[in-house]
Every structure is written in structure tokens, then in C-alpha cells.
Length: 280
Ligand SMILES: O=C(O)C(=O)C[C@H](O)C(=O)CO
Ligand SMILES: [Zn+2]
Image (cartoon, rainbow, N blue to C red):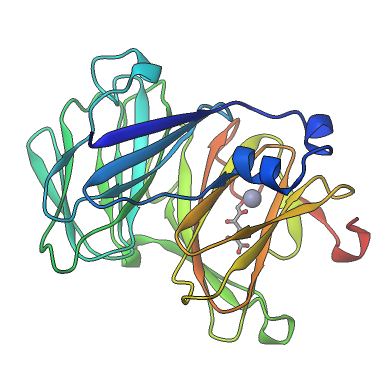
């Protein structure tokens, strides 16, 4: 079986208050994103985003439709964006080949029929982290190199959150229906992401943490500002952030993460900030 899919239903913020550690992890943490020669998907009911890992080591992986979609092609009514965190890979979309190096992205528009993923060499395989959301319009498929990204330099070494945000799938770089996606690299010595914390009930978000050294972990914070919880996340694991939830983390070491969003608008700056001193 090269494609596996798990379904996650949406959680009300008042129910979430009663969750213990294992229930929080069951609903919001995706522990296994990448399996060799497999496509591992999680279909969430938050804006129906699908979060997944595509890890073609020595075989070509075809993105076939899954039962949850009841469509003949995976992208019949959806769009997809993927960022490669491994070695160089090749994405083939209806016969056209795109070479995607580490930290580059590809956007694939609604209507693509045949989509496959491969590694250039099995000794340094590609690892595509993907998000997919329903789409109402067809936009062109496009490769996004790291140098095409819109880069924001934020934070400060004195508050341990100096970082660069690579907005890869964002208005001005790629046209999408509702997906936005990018990668945030913390500078050496910085461990806090996304300060000040924020919510945006217009959009859900998913975080995927990687480049975290072995034996280290990220403590990811979630919840409304007055009712926070945390989830300990390991390397190459993802967290689903509901629209009512803040999303921010602190690592026991330096790391990088990929964020992806879907929902009401495509306005990255639309955030409601919460002062650290007001958090409960
Ligand atoms: O470090 C950051 O700040 C982020 O990467 C923030 C995310 O991009 C985000 O939460 C966008 O809404
Ligand atoms: Zn956010």
C-alpha cells in the first residue's frame, strides 16, 4: 500500500479544555509524517486541509485519489503545495517534469490528473511535505525556488527568536485559491518561533517541525490565549492548529518548521496578537 490516509474531525474549543495529554496528541499531533516509499496523508476537517509526507526513496510514488475525496483524480477539486526537505526530487505533473531541490516548493493547481514524485538518487532521497485544500479555480502549476520566496527577517537574538520566514506559496509568488505555505528558519541560538503568539480564526494552520537534532524536542503551544496547553513534538512531526488556537513553539535546540494555512482569506498579515504577559 503506497498511500495511507487517516481522518481527523474538528474539535470544539470548550471540549479541548478537558483533554489530557494523550487525547491532545491523538487529535492534534501527526507523529508519523514520512515512511520510505509511501505517501502518508491526514485528512483534517479544519478547512478540509490534507497534511502529508511523500517519501520516494527508490520507487516513483503516484498521488492517486483516496476514498475520502470520491473523485477520479486527487486534484479534481483540490490544489496542492509541497516543500522538499530532502535531497533533489522530481515531480511529474501530467507529463511535465519539475526538478525540486531542498527547500524548494511546487504548487500544483486544481485539475491535474497524473501527479508523481521521485528522488533523483536513492542515496539522498527527496522528502516532500505537502498540504492540499479544496479549490474553486484552476491556477497554473509552478515551481518555487528558495530565491523566489518572499523573505521576512523577524525577531531578535536577545529574545531567542531571530528567524527568517520564507513565504514560498504566497500571493505575489504563486496564485492559489486558499493555500499559503512557507518555511521558517531559526537562526543558530534562537529557539522560539512565532512571537508574539497569535490566532486567526479566519484560517486554520499546520506546523511541521524538522532539522531538530536527535534527542531534542519542540514544546508546541496551542489553545486560546486564556486556556493554553502544550504538545511535545519530535523531529519531522506535525501539529494541526484549529482556527481558535494559537501556534508557537520553543525548542530544546535550534530547528526549522514549515507552516501551511487554508481558510477564509489569503492575507498572511491578518493575525490577532496576544501579549506574552496576558497568556494563561
Ligand atoms: O515564526 C513565525 O512567526 C512564523 O512562521 C509564523 C507563521 O508563519 C504563522 O503563524 C503565520 O500565520
Ligand atoms: Zn499563524
